[in-house]
Image 1 (tube, rainbow, N blue to C red):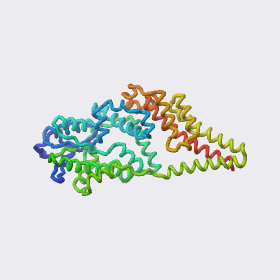
Image 2: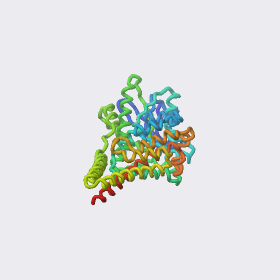
Image 3: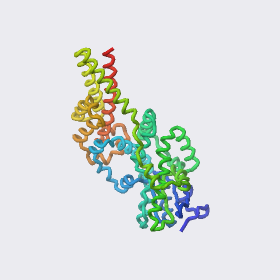
Image 4: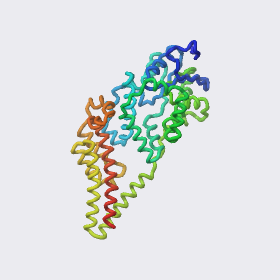
Length: 410
């Protein structure tokens, strides 16, 4: 059964909804563009499932996001100690900030973030249809976006991310619905791309190509069941690009998806700059000892005092436990002797060990981080804050110590 999109037959729930129909390799893809915190989007998903017959349902989710949506208590299973130890603190913090912003919008309208995706999965399961998770892993997307921009652009990216959380102005629901109009979307993305083409490519363009490839891949794998019609539920921002690529993409879908799921190599110059600075400082300290033992001792003392002092300052500002403050004081000066292990990680692990997160911290995490004070009230957020501020303090201490030592030699 197929629903003709005419003014006479189109039901109210689908009026004004951006829907594209693409036929590729014998499969018709009915692509619905949604707003992730819109009641109308949920109703549109339910209406399409009720009125049309589909052989599969695809959603703009990766396995981890789908699991989190199906299991609301998944966040409580997070091992904060392991997150820090494995160097994932930045990605976890960014994901929490994004989800907090989405939750703020959702709270205005009494609907859960991604409710239309959940409605699509639930509807598919009720009808015994397979669910295809076609989006790229959110961690991979964030890392590719982060590494796609320059050093200074990253500050703007972080600033915009934080501003989205702490902004208190309410967004009218009609403005969210307007985002589904194709001409507005195209205009908005054109402006976005002109400001940061690499960022647009990572967040939008690459995911369009990835999802198009995954849809083709799933259709090929499910050939034994002969899927003829697939409902695709995606964010409206991907509608135009995905449909174009679904029609024109010629590369092997599995190879395309694998390539886009890989992490680009890290930029090496920041690491070499940091290593060069530390080497220069220690050469200066050695030269100071060569000139005069007391001058060398003074230079070494300056290194310890400045790196330990600013690391401790970061832990204190984060409201760290005395043990995590002590860990910061020890970790700061010896950072050059343990490459790959940030001083903030040592202090934050001490914080997580002493002040283990409570169930209430997980329950209120997304709400707490939407307020400045919540970062200090919530034990999980405070541990992440400790990580970042101690790392920042150590860096400031290294540069300050270097400047002070070089001045003493002149």
